[in-house]
Amino acid sequence: MTRQNAQALDARDPLASLRTQFALPEGVIYLDGNSLGVLPAAAPARVAQAVQQEWGEGLIRSWNTANWVNLPQRVGDKIGRLIGAPPGQTLAGDSTSVNLYKVLAAALLLAKQQGDPARRVIVSERSNFPTDLYIAEGLARQHGFELKLVEPEQIAAQFGPSLAVLMLTHVNYRTGRMHDMAAITRAAHGCGALALWDLAHSAGAVPVDLNGADADFAVGCGYKYLNGGPGAPAFLWVHPRHLERMEREDLWQPLSGWFGHAAPFEFSPHYRPASGIARFACGTPPVLGLTALETGVDTALAAEPLGGMAALRRKSLALTSLFITLVEARCAGHGLTVITPRTEGERGSQVNLARGEGAYAIVQALIARGVIGDFRAPDVLRFGFTPLYTSFTEVWDAVEHLRQVLESGEWKEARFNQKAAVT
Ligand SMILES: *Cc1c(COP(=O)(O)O)cnc(C)c1O
Image (tube, rainbow, N blue to C red; front, top):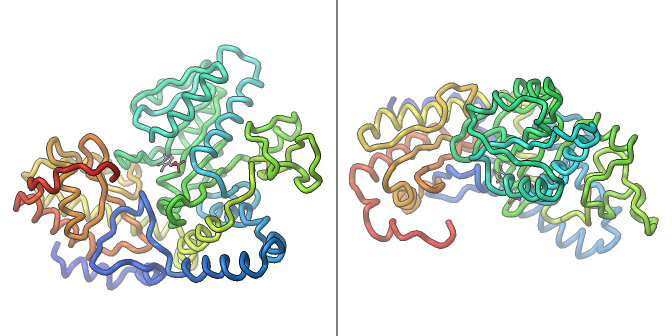
């Protein structure tokens, strides 16, 4: 595999044109779209319009004239197209952590409604992203549940009468390993439990079919593969059977704020939940954040005429496979271990390497060369591949930089080994 081969792959990449949707800085190979997606070229003008016209000129009238009121639903429905959800099931707004609080609390409520006091266990992965575990830990304390953390190989052994909710992140942030959502959800339902999925590293990166998998609840992140910008609003999804049941049995999600009220502008002193997904809203939607997020979601939807998520998945697997092959061929003997599964069906859109010593410094040395990946404690070098804009030539070049960093030993310099407070 030569650089010319990689260039040839780019020349016949049917998705190559999607890259023009982004304002990528010169001289940077960006392999961190799984942490903060890049700026959509349309975002600055669209956000400026929202600020200057909608806010500046329209002022309060823009809640109606610019349809600010419907932004959470409109952006939610667009995200729904990427995750197998028809309109009316997905809501954009709040952070992933807050959305997880709302849907996990609803799941615990539904589990309690079954009336079986022995069904009080939430199971998750020990290596799940910490905020998910912290939210679950807090809710478990509040509601008398036990949070049980297991290794991925132990999940199959958790399906039993005590399992209330299985809460998993579809693609693991540290290993890049992807779960079989449909099979695990089926097993959870088989023992009477609910399945809640975090799509932070999936939405916009790998195909997701929430309805096809018959999932119960989901949340996901706006600033990663959806390119919504720093601190972008996140999203949540609830299966319609639960929305209907919550309505029938008058069950509330815990953050019963006025935007989730059936008639917020009646200013009634009593809460009455809206029907449908709107009952999962809380306060006033973050209009500017949602406006930027919409431009990001649109960059992924632009792939629809080119084959959509299936085509993006093909390219993502080709990128990650190329990276693995090149690392093993060109960086052999330098102590790197590929910790992301080689089986394509088990891989998300990132490749993570472990190295006993120097992982942090090697990432810093790469960043100094303009190759931006990231480090995850204690020993992981993490590289995200975004099929919307990452090219095969960039993969080749990134591995060449990695090879040079390792061969030269430049990562051992003190300036790369000094850990910054925030990375
Ligand atoms: C990125 C990520 C989050 C982020 O949560 P915030 O509330 O936006 O800080 C949550 N969960 C997972 C699994 C993530 O990867």
